[in-house]
Image (cartoon, rainbow, N blue to C red; front, side, top):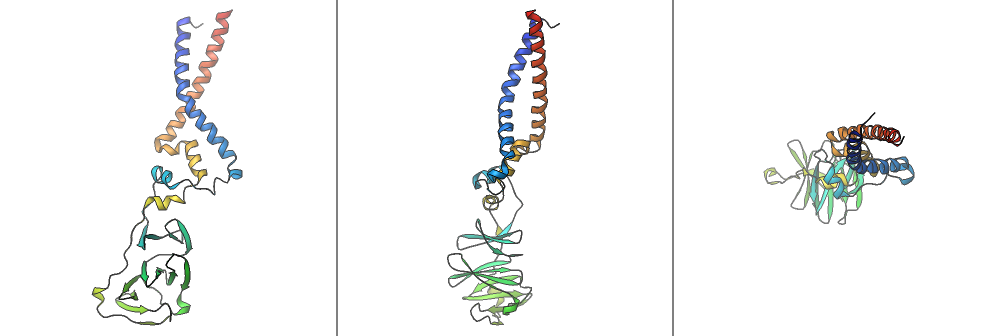
Length: 238
């Protein structure tokens, strides 16, 4: 039979652990309820704000092109302009400005956008656009294409392909740069993933899994200590 002092110590530990667990149990309960109704709440379709995603999540480096105050990049075969998905594009190899238009070089095709970043047309091999183009540049208001060591000029209006300038050393080719994480994550982290990570502890990294396990163990310990105090208290009253 437990002494009064032992029962007092168990009660003190029970109280302290209970205060520690309260926050985590509330979070786990609320996130569990939300996940049970994720379909009705369409959590898999809605994304968390960019400032949250960029703070708590990271992503692999994605290369893109900065043009007209916008970032052009490809994820999963889709072309994005900043946060907006605009077209299909297997691989992006350049983005330039010609007059009041933007031209984006994808794999063996050219995508043309208006000055307000609206998709205008897609020019592929069936329209005379050469295959295996890996470089693009704007030079003296000409759209230049690089095919190996050869340079050609291409007119998006007439669709004519002609030999380009011979002074290729002066041509400044479109160069890729890194795309900010805030753009990459803004449409990629759903509320379902965010809540699931909170629920499982993955939100806190590798240590979060152990933290969740600790909460589980302490919850069991709380149940046992509560049962012990209840039985001991009943015996004392007798």
